[in-house]
Length: 72
Image (cartoon, rainbow, N blue to C red):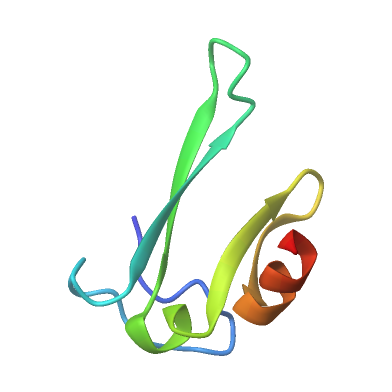
């Protein structure tokens, strides 16, 4: 169950889906027993951050600007 913002520096409690952004991360999606997790960034954090899932690292909150630079 989601209880707070996925940004470790933020303590905003999860109350409504309409405030923020919900993320679904599939672990081992190529296996029949794959695991799915949900994460949430509050509206304030979602305006400047996103979540990135990396094998061995887990899910981390990163600035949107760093993701946009990698994409271009």
